[in-house]
Image (cartoon, rainbow, N blue to C red; front, side):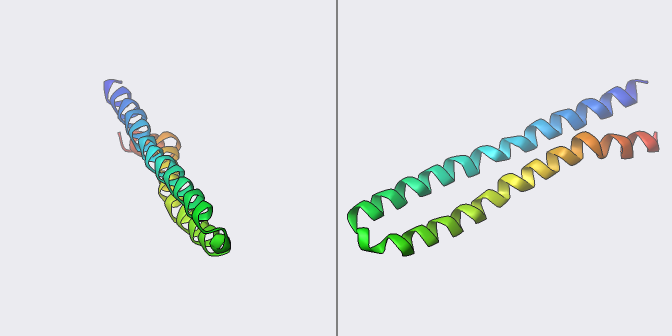
Length: 87
């Protein structure tokens, strides 16, 4: 009985820690958009190039947050079942 509680607790703690990975993309994307706005403010004629580059960078940065979400969901829903079946 205690083993099951430890497995469930470890999965919950691991899922919480993995969701900390969502902080980085949020900060990075906010910084990138701010710098893009500054660049467009300085040179409005380069709006298309700056916006395209910014959106591509934000999409790449967002993937790390999505990976963290997927790992968290796996730790909540899949890992406990897998580990508890082995006990």
